[in-house]
Image (cartoon, rainbow, N blue to C red; front, side):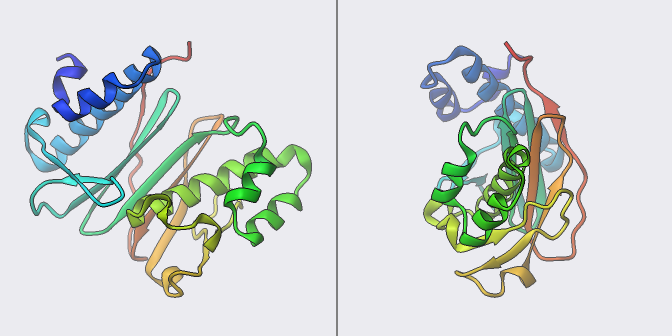
Length: 214
């Protein structure tokens, strides 16, 4: 089956608004991959899955399925997080996407994160920036609030392989007790993170190559 034929009219419309063919094709493949994963978990036909969207645009399955999910892809790698009865967010990024990590960090990182980044040797800052960024992104995606949650108001660690990376959240002082944020495996040249509500969960890795680099 052609991947485009699996998507809804809304998804096809979004894809068609992407001007770069390679990026458009990755969008189509990633969202078709997501539908296949959700079809496996729900027992439904992948083409028949109906999505609804939260106020910040986070998708969820229409109806009361109890299944929560999140998709992230960067270049030719995608990751999907799926959870039952708990909010979940995932993010993956190539480590070389930020051209000027220090300047970007000053705009979006918390004071503690900026301090941590600048304390590192210059040749370690790109990786630390990406590790911090994917953790922040996974957390706000799990919350379902997008960038309405000011990213400088919560702090995560950049420590490699940190399995409890949320340090504090000024908007929710109970966040560290109610959420868990971890680094997960990623191919060489990428960083990835997973966030989910609760502290009593484990995860099973799911990953897919999308397209070769041009």
